[in-house]
Length: 331
Ligand code: NAI
Image (cartoon, rainbow, N blue to C red; front, side):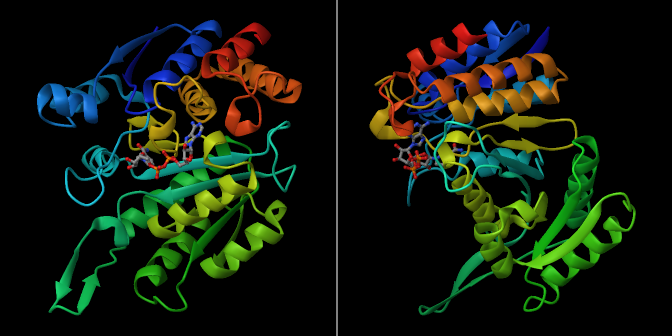
């Protein structure tokens, strides 16, 4: 029995969470879900969008499955996702993008993994106005931050039988920050002679991903490039609605889709639960429940190829719960 923290989230979160939980339960794995509220619901009930009990539960259980949370634009509270990543030091953002038959995209055999640094870079939020007509933002890259993310990428490559790690940077222009990241990447790479290593400048990498994605395998990079390139990779396999994600630290991991709360679909039972489901599959693999993970992936693959029970965003007319039922029937 695994104890897992569950954050259903806002908007479509509760519906896609129910679908995902039903499918995971049908796979036969035994999980005790500890549900906690964050986001709008917690804000209304407890006056804070991120109550202490959320952190306490995640720290206790070490693993969480999380739906999307609303971040108010402009005023209001700051991003809850960023707050969680910072306070739990979840320094890896893992974003695999793999082609699935039955999902329309321009390519058929994509199998890429973006390993994005999640705590540093220009995302530390140190920015200010300089007078009225200029603004400054500080980019922070450290040896420790670079080393642990590059090492994670190599350890992942070994564990998952991957062949190559590509470090992505702009060290030709940002000689100190990205230069440090690249130096550290080369040092760490020298400890893993069994894995091929190369580096690519981020603009070239973006073009290469669109033109020759089959040449790449595991990609590791600082926060900003990772944010952008992981969405490019998602686009290569059908978009944000069909790819999973995970935020991982030492001994703690939160599995969550990259998409948001899709407010226009909330409460209508039409959203696609696939990204959360595949995040759940990553979670099962992380827990060592590989056969349950494989069972779900095969059933999902069959439903996608059948094509008769797809949600609207995939060109079908099935509801969230019908899509989930179709997967459960295949299992
Ligand atoms: P969004 O991802 O919610 O929506 C973008 C587009 O994709 C919309 O057309 C939406 O309807 C569609 N979409 C997204 N997920 C879908 C699904 N599962 N099935 C079918 N269609 C889907 O992004 P948006 O509109 O920028 O953000 C809405 C809210 O979500 C904001 O409050 C934002 O802060 C929050 N957000 C939260 C994230 C998280 O908690 N990890 C990530 C991104 C956004």
